[in-house]
Image (cartoon, rainbow, N blue to C red):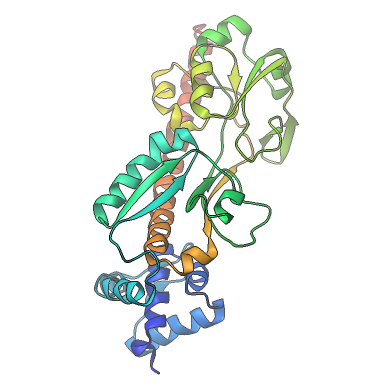
Length: 328
């Protein structure tokens, strides 16, 4: 059968356009990577044109491929819903979505409303942060985790964002407690730390290039959510190395929070989106949501990260100028 007449080839093509990854498309189609690559190559040969720019990472669909996707995707989705009737009949499907509360409030809620507007046949029930075992047991459909599960059995795991945090404090706290000049000075300070759902430790290290320093504090306060961490920081209770920059961007721009120990960062957190392999392979609506969420969240987070570097550098510069002027 020619690839142009092969539904599987078009399924792989659509999935590769969404995920920007032929390997992820292969997982979704439940085939091996070589077969997925052959199907894409077959489409390109029969169409007489390249569909993806494979010199870029992630791969990018060409302009022609995007036009083709717009025409083909509704047909592929329709066939999938006919061939995969599980949970598709009976109207609206509710997807149970688990995420850390602060991300659900400040980021994912907007994305879920947006998706519901684009695809009226899907609604969401947002539940508190959970772990991979709850996904395996079918208690939630999709979960956002702060780190990859050690045991991937039965799961489809997609990395979509990594974020690096930096030491932060308020000017008032620094005026009272002093400004640390190097990581070892943190032993004289209060540490405001985060212990995520599946974290084993809260101490760790700071990194600057290839150098690293253990985190030692005079005293610590540990919480499980970033919103509490932010409140403690703004109430001048100490220094945090765990607060995501997206939660305090306005405060940093306004000078109410300042970055310190320039060049030193926490190890990146690799967040991932997790769902049950069997469920995704047999449920087109769930699979389409996960693919959309992965692509849009990844693109948005990448933009945020690039922008962070610009305004964060400005914040370090302003803090240095304030110190030189004796204002901190």
